[in-house]
Length: 336
Image 1 (cartoon, rainbow, N blue to C red):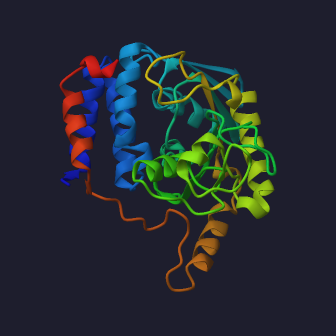
Image 2: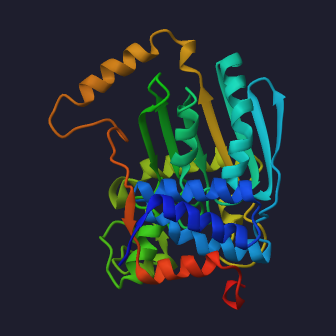
C-alpha cells in the first residue's frame, strides 16, 4: 500500500476532475476539499468520492462548468444557486459576500440550493472560521434513517458542523458529525471489508437490530443515541432536514436519489449555513479562552478539533491509487 503525500493527492485529483470536464478553478477547489479530508483521515469524504465525481461529470449529473449565482435578497440572507454544480464552489463564490454581510448585520444565513453533495461540511465551516466568523452548517442526504421504533426511511444521515474562530486567523474549535450513530460510509466500508458492525448502529428492513452491514443498508441507520435514546439524534436530524431543505429550496431527503449513482438527475441538494460575527459581543473571546482552558485541565483532553495533527502523507490502497492515476488520464468506457 503506497504512502502518498497530500499534495500529490490534491494534484492528481485536480488532474482527474479537469480530465473529466471540470473547469480549472472548479477542479482546484474540489481537489482542495479532497486533500483537506485526506489530511484529516476522513477517507469517506476524500479519494473514495473522486471516481463518483468523475463519472457524474461525464454523464452530466454534476455540471463542472457551472458558475454559481450569488444574491442577497435580505440584509442577513445570502442565496446561492449552485446551478447543479458542486457545493464547494458555490460556497467559495458566496463567502466574501457572506463575510461582509455578517460583519454588517452580526448574523447572516447562506442558503445554497441545486447543489451536489458537499461531502465534508467541516471544510465549509472551517473556511468561514478562518475568516473570523462562528459557523454552523448542515445538509441532508438520500433517505437512510427511520424514526425511532419505525422502519420507513424518512431522512438522511443529515450531518451538521460547527467551527469557531480563534481571533487570530485560525480555528479554536470545530466538529463535523452526522445525526446518526455513525456515518453511512462506515457501513459501506464494513460491507466492502467483509466485517460486521456493532449492534446499535442500524436496523434491518423489519426494524430489528442487526450487525450485518448488508442488512443495515437494506434497512436504516439509527439516529444519534442508538437504540435506547435515538430520539435525541432524531430531533436533530429533523431540524437539519427543515433547515437544509426548507430554508434553501433543496430536495427533501425522501426525494434525493443515491448520491454515488453515475447517472440520473442532479442531486438538487441544499446546504444551510449560519455565520455569526463574534465581534458583536465583546465578551466572546474572553469566554472562549476560559472555556478552552477548562476543557484541557485534565491530561489527554482537548477542545474538538484542537491540536489535531494533519497528515502530510496517507496510505492509499493500491487499487484506489491505480484508479486515481487512471482517472487523471481522462475518461474511459468505465466512467459511464
